[in-house]
Length: 561
Image 1 (cartoon, rainbow, N blue to C red):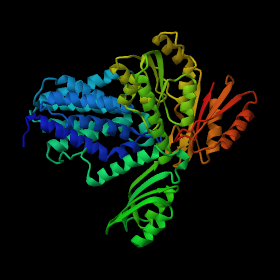
Image 2: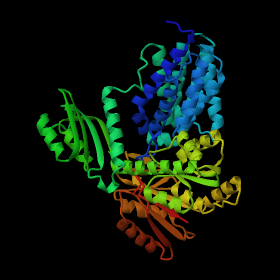
Image 3: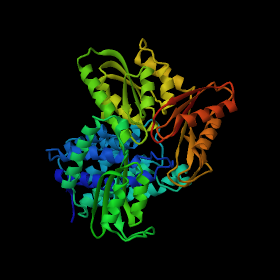
């Protein structure tokens, strides 16, 4: 059936369908991240960003597409996480600016809106890179414009936009050699394709506008339990948590190559009951659902595979969550106190994960810490709220992660406070930059000096590979330890200390004077002390500093100055 104009309710349906489609495929998008590190979160960031935008559209009372598009844009912006989320918000910011007064959206207006979205997104990125989400969006819009000259059917235009996006996505490895090297397409571009698929599925009647935000009774129960869990956690000390991993699995009974047992509910439940507490097992003839708090999530997964294939896995570190909750509560308490305080001339906001690292930033003069970083990119709204809570006339932001730059920049633009973003890509750069801060200087003077100081530090990281791949001729095996220097993978080794030593060797030069080692939550100081001896063996004159950073994902972070 021909569709010559998209109504407000239809546009709402498109957005909901797109949010559903992206949500269903977020983990797949995550898997396309080039680096095989356990913080590939493009899909998560785009999904959370789209969820925020879709929620704003869902709650709207207007039936005008132009106004709905503006709400989508605002929701995307405030919920934007990571560079991919910010670029997505800019695509729809331009989209909405093209159709501010439109009531029902025609095919020509739809195509023009996509084109203007691309122009806006390209302007928002300081150094646009081809072979990314920008390329996919541009080529999709170009094909859509051509189709709009041939037809007034909105569905046909959207179909062409999607075809253009898919063709462009398939070509991204030819534009970015690193994508071809590891055999994937661009993750952000793939996320955008899923959004466009949702749009088309709704317009063509193939996808109902599912209620993304209306929780089921079971989900409501889970939310209530989570709220209770939070209130209980707030009363505990972290060390009081006996079983640290909230583990959930879903098993398809009798399916897969690892099955060696017939399912018996009592036997199954009794075994898991010995591994922890808060156990819940629900089963029918086909599916087993498990929730348990345990110290050994791997054993739960392995046991589940004896009865079938794992079709859902979720493991949360409750100790880390607890620390985050306590910190959030402390931040809220601090914010309440600050409401009655007079404004201060300056504040520095740092984004960091790990209790030790956060304390180090505070000791260096940071006024406010946003808990986040790898796998936990704060949204634009999170950063805006932090800017408001510090009650300062001038605010400096240290993202300490290249994937947080754009969200920080967007927060600076929408804030009424004078804000400057210091482009720190790593924790090491952020700490070095703090040494250059002077509250007697102007905002721009501080940004300039702090940025210059970062050039004197080399940053190193050690983490675990999440898949087999080859990058820069380095063969990487899943579960090996990889070392990175200034964001570039330089080694891959079976043992963590071996990878750490080789990474440090790549960092140390004749000019190096100080090596700083930040010990992660999954490492211990004794390992760091061994590393310290290895450093001294390389150069006895080097000064070595050890800090318990407590950062997740990365057993060791290094800085060389």
